[in-house]
Amino acid sequence: MHYTNLFHQFFLRISPDTGWVLQLVHCSRGLVLDELETALKQSHITDPDTCLFQLQLLGLVLRSQDGWKPTWHGIGVSNWRVHLLFAKGDLVSEPRDSENGHHLGPDCDIYRPTLFSPGYCWCCRPRHAHKSEFLKAAEELLRAPFSKAKTRLAPRSHSKKTPDPKP
Ligand SMILES: [Zn+2]
Image (cartoon, rainbow, N blue to C red; front, top):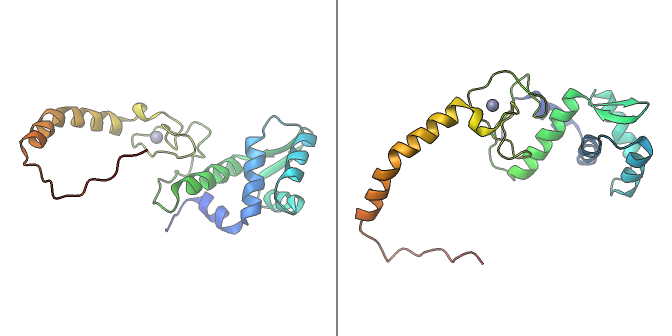
């Protein structure tokens, strides 16, 4: 896959363990430092301190009095990482330059679904808030009666093997 977004460039530079640490920092917002460090120690990650140091050098996390926090880019990389994990190798939609999947992005007409937040676009708006989806829904409604009639009139083939019903 050839992805061009900035988060992918970061994703390629960090190890899988560092990616997990970033996700943990991202998901644990609100946890105090002690709690986060305990969670890191209990994880399978062998050297979380080195991972945090690398993330800090890349500008993906910040350490404050309260603990570790992801930066705007860190949130984007964390979201992109989860997006790719859920995609399981399928081609997925990419964020635009000013989007990280968490903060509201600029106006957007083309729905680009996120796998880390189903039903939402990289711009952080729900699917129905996109003109492209409104038009698609309208087209589907217009086509629906004709496609149903076509299916009913089409001769049925019994030679095709039908898939087993799901358990
Ligand atoms: Zn959008």
